Length: 371
Image 1 (cartoon, helix red, strand yellow):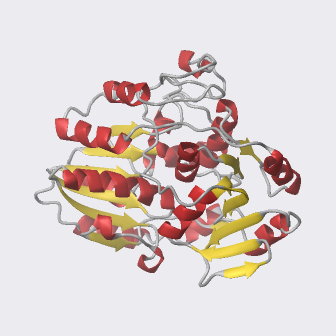
Image 2 (spheres, rainbow, N blue to C red; image 1 turned 90 degrees about the vertical axis):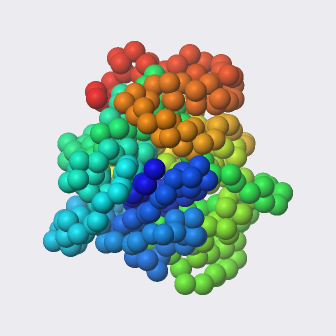
């Protein structure tokens, strides 16, 4: 098939997940061309797997000091360019559009009446999953930002819904785990706020990856510019992760058994919901602000919970090739049957479990929103 694949570039998680799926689709013989939007080309890295690709402005969100800025977001939108890019895209010969929450390709599919599959964590919000910080506008954005007729939602747990486990790339083994080393990825927080938070814990080494020009060592604070290879190496060698409540990094940390402390982006319903899900499942800790006491308690915790997710990208590629996209229930069931949960985590249909499924399966949980 000839596939047009859209990737939302504002978060590294979209890129990481799409990189695996695009690579698998190409291996299976599909012709894939990619549009990445939402981030300048000079701030993208490790893009070889996406060739041929184009970078477009798309739509993005403005933040300041870890909070979503709705008015700055609206002021920064270039809707004329956005709709021009949709109108000018040559979709002749395209058999299928896949969008990882990317709005341009989603609307190209609508304009040309092409079949479209949405793959990503955001599409899980079409189902009954734990939700926190409910906001009607955010709910509308999650469901309409990048619409697709066929949806593959991803989450850490099935919650009794036809959604899939995370797409986790093959992660490097790295060196030995350093028990007093923590990876820090808080891209929406100010550098000085991070410095103030971590400075008191001089007995620990913090590898802080942020938007920097060059590395900088300040005692136990090791500042590093963003880069996929160095980031994954730091993840493999660290005992735990302190991060915002995005989906992909937490998924990678769970696959490696790292302990997790998340600080959700204030006012961002998706991240608040992710934080709630991690806490409900017993998979991570949450701080709603940069809190030294929460960090201290986290550092004292023993090791994290390890969840072994299958090769979901391979399952998705086979499902796409089958061209039966109406119901993902069988695909979801196969993926969860291959997922291994440890005794201390809530099961989701995997082969090892200790506690019953949380009430979301029955649809009676107040933490879930209807379809």
